[in-house]
Image 1: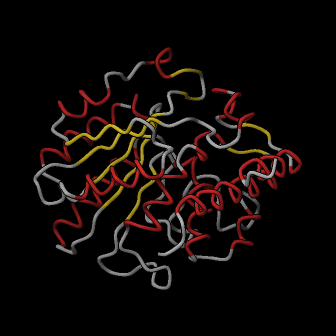
Image 2: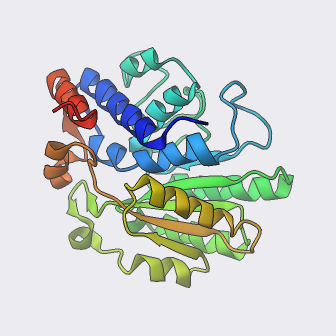
Length: 275
């Protein structure tokens, strides 16, 4: 792809604001924190073909924090999986774009997610299946930091290391906030890098997970470990609501919040640098 990743990030953020603003409510904070990662994966790193979304041997992404579905949908639309007009049907009757990811409804979604913790187990299963099939795919997974309080995450982590799933690259969206407040106060998961290392994973810690250059470099680094006998966890220190000041300032309140079309339009102007 020859499009500038920063401009792609702006397009994805604006489309997230448009579809959630049109609906009037959504998981805006955790969608905006993921944009740089999604842009890097879908426009630079993943072996995929929007014209053949079920292509054998394709790389696959499992967004275990399935409530960030609107960010994935905006990315897929920008990548050409379906028309952007569909984004305006988000979570409405008859839509192909429910609030949480659904592989049976949305072109380009590789795994249904939403019940926190379970998507990561599915990603591990997909990676194991890919290994057994020998299809050469890289499996990518995204987990939330609040989600990382789930025991199922660590059961899957232990299994992935035991089975030497070195075709699996996972990311933690470490924005430090969850629906009930700061992660550190609800049920602290720190020190996160040491935990993943102790579970037998390669670990890459990215100081600013909303810096597209750092994210791209981290993914390239992670890919060097493919075939090395260990899965890799990339910890992305992100900002919940990144890209729109008043949404960032809501803190944990931006997890799932009301957004009017007027607020969305103002946010888009800010993202585009027009204010």
